[in-house]
Image (cartoon, rainbow, N blue to C red; front, side, top):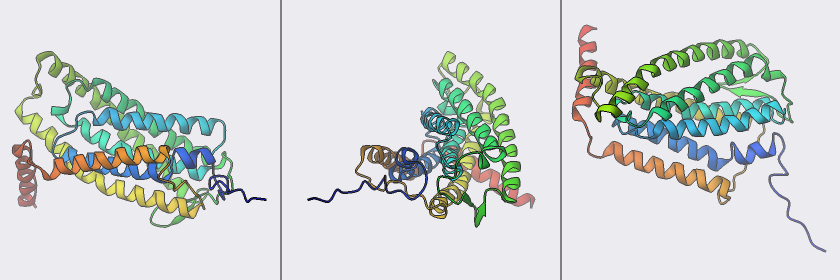
Length: 290
């Protein structure tokens, strides 16, 4: 007589087994956190080549799985929102890297994919708070969301979240409109083999904007990370913790290596001191006006 060892995934108290293992397992989450923060640090040094296609590609892959689970109603509202938050974490370095004029040559596909991924993400967020929050099966979860406090999804917090989702979508569409200019810049840079199609003045403005955007993005990323981890606890979700599994080890290793590479780029010798001086001068001018 022998005792069979139970699979920890099958002993899950609530939620979808596939999503808990493949979409928001511990290794997946840590990998995304490290990669997003690391890329934002690297954008501060204007080193953002391939960031757009990397982040937006991951967003599209996650959203494809999310959409299938939602359409087939195989995921709880708590998990659906948690996965949307994960894609939000990835959207910040992608959007910040768009502003880097020296990372435009050969990046047309990355710009287009970033636009598609963020539009998809924005629509998913609106549809979730408008319809899906009470249409998906609970799967044993209390359907709570954490943002500085624990809230019920079907309470007054939903109105605030829906308004925020609409505002967020308008910001995304403004970014998409600006991307048409960026695509033209990318084409001109490729045609003339240069990174200065904007001219010195506007190039410095875009570089300063990219640095400020990347530095500012770290704050909402940290807020989303805390919200994701608290959502998991509040909804009694038990995602896989086994980092030795390939599905967890691979994204974790990629995220850790990306973070280390980007951190070294931040603390290393800057490529362009003039860009940093531009930001300092702008901050100094604003302080003098006040």
